[in-house]
Length: 590
Ligand SMILES: Cc1cc2nc3c(=O)[nH]c(=O)nc-3n(C[C@H](O)[C@H](O)[C@H](O)COP(=O)(O)OP(=O)(O)OC[C@H]3O[C@@H](n4cnc5c(N)ncnc54)[C@H](O)[C@@H]3O)c2cc1C
Picture 1: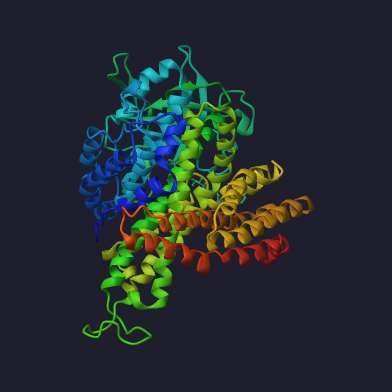
Picture 2: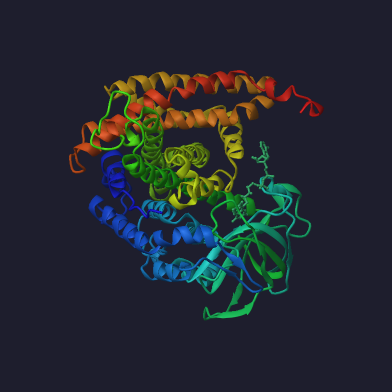
């Protein structure tokens, strides 16, 4: 199985020539020391490190998986050393707060690090990924005492982190959480309950694991308003940060999964485990969901990484595999047959992968920029606009990037023919690994309900506005043919939004019936906007990345507009058919 290097040029193009990295940081007055060259050099170094240390572990991680023993969970061979080297090289602390030992580098770089981790070894990527999420939550909501106690080691990666939300009877509906938290006399809490599917819940990579656990205090209101958030460390911590007694918690077992086998997914038992309340009582879900924007963007980026990796491997194969002749006659007469890349259908699949990866990267980095604006801008109106954009785009990034990753990785298998179904080439692993990205951090169905139910209907369509305005402004200022076509799709998208808003007043089921199709349509239109920008940028290309690179971008965007974007018409027709074809079926008729 190939361990192909990540294409750094793709990052450089988007950061420098599409999203104006230097201008973005200048406007915010941050990271001015990081010009594009430095930014790209850091990405190159991260890629080199992971290519050498993580990529070679990927295949074995999938095959060997994790194993549960009485006291711990062992991770695949090599992960322990990788984790140590990763932390020692400073990758764990890249964007951490310098007050706690972090390097204070940019969030955007951290996002790309997540992309690289998944690109080289998806089963490994969640160990640093979740720790980053826990650290961010504590940086934002932890008390000073909690920050001092937990952040230094979480920042350097000496300790790792988890998010414990799901229970056997509740995943989507967290209002049903019944893990309990009993106050103790010393101000801490005793946490009791079972959490399932906990990523990195137990492992052998580092000395301590800091769990963030949703639990319910005695007499707490029922439902989502009665849930609080607790820090529950595997080992209690002494004042001098040395490890104290083992807390009364542990992994009862691990799950045996379809993919992402290197990632330990644990059933965790908490048995009067000592925990510490974060923020105020009954505010747990709000705190957790505040952090979800980042976590969902990271999951979308995992989908992007899978798309990119599957494409590069399929491209290499399509250039080597000789089968049949081109329809127009032999193109390589000296060879036994032509390489399969000459066939239109193989090109259809490759270009679908390529155009998804390119456009989605720009979309994801744009969303990352909004998070940076929210964190650092001093201008209230700018922050408010970025918050609206982020709220609107988060479910799209999470669900669209991961759903199209399934299509892309499926094509990866198809391009390899029967060889794609064979483990040796790694394509089937991408398809298996990518499936989870559409499930955890909220399923596609739930992202779509969030988009349509909360972001459109409850706000009277308010949240589509800023994104639609940005697209309109781009169209108004662009003379390209793609911009003209984009106008028609922007109009179609707006019409469809109005149609759903109106139909929701007639039958609430029309929201759920339309939601996933509408989310996908939104994704296709927004991706078209980014493809049109890539197209413009490539036409004006600075030349630094080579003629073929820019031509590739131009043609990829034109392919996307001709062959993928028209899917919006059929989505609109499906949405227009409403809920009746789904809801008319009576239970006995299924
Ligand atoms: C490998 C793996 C790792 C995970 N890591 C973690 C972790 O670290 N921490 C953690 O807390 N959890 C984790 N999870 C749990 C994950 O977040 C949940 O599985 C996910 O949120 C879905 O919950 P569920 O499995 O209970 O499905 P359910 O909530 O039972 O949903 C089943 C189906 O019903 C649909 N559905 C439910 N309600 C509605 C509705 N109102 N409208 C339309 N459709 C609906 C869903 O979309 C889904 O298709 C992980 C899961 C896996 C498999």
